[in-house]
Amino acid sequence: MEKFKLELLFQLVGIGASSGLLYHDFHLFLISDSSSFLYRYSLNGKELTKIKLHGNSAENNLKLVKPDLEAICKVDNTLYTFGSGSTAKRKTAFTFNLLSQQTSQLDLSILFENVTTKTGIDAENINIEGVIPVGNDWLFFQRGNGIRAQNGIIRLTGNLENPSEITFIPIELPSINNVSATFTDAVLVAETIYFLAAAEDSNSTYADGEVMGSLVGAMNLSDFKILFTQPISEMHKFEGITLYEETETELRFLLCEDQDNESQLAEIFLLTIKKTTRQGAVFLRLR
Image (tube, rainbow, N blue to C red; front, side, top):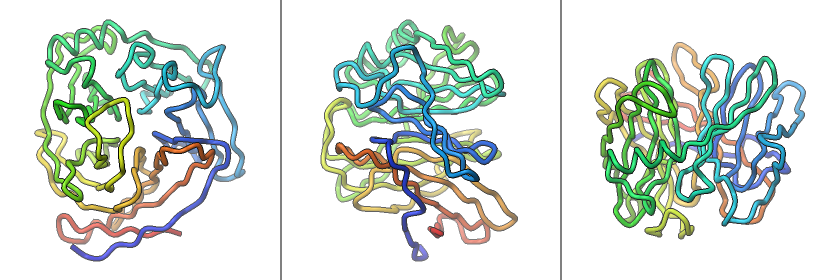
């Protein structure tokens, strides 16, 4: 593997435990696993605004009651944010319409019950960290950091709340410092899924453990075959990835991390993958 470089791009004060991000139209939308706000940062105006996802939106929610927002994606003109599903309070999705600026919420309790029935991933092991809508499917990236280590992709076919088919595709990822890496987010670019995974020394979907590092990887959309994986840090737990720019020679992604502390500071990184390098070669360049 060629060498890579990782540096900080910029910081956003007022956002703690950033867990997902999405770039759209010169704006960066962020979610936090401790907050029930959607954050919107204008890259042109350098302005951060908070959007209430429901009437009682709050920051720094207690762990027992937080919605644990972990995934964000876009369908047409609507943003979807998803809870991890790991407790009863975390089975809600919130939407934000980019045109009307209106929010709504979806109770996915029945969906998660059906997922458990169809996949065998029980309530103690479910932990959704990324969501990709594609065609008639929704791909839920299940972080297998529970005691049963069920890492993989839950594919929902049809309606989000009541899919006609639910399947689970197990995905095994490499270890970092002797701890298995598990999904923390993913994004689709053309026919390739680019994903993040982190290694955390814990077998609980609820309690944090010592962070052993993060990796980036890619897989085919058609068959979920892994194309490459590359460790990118031994200290950061990256939890969000979004496509920022694409040129003839490069793909540029923005990343965020969950620092698992009380800091109200979101750190945003830039990951550049050169298209011209051999398979698996990853370069990180930060501006």
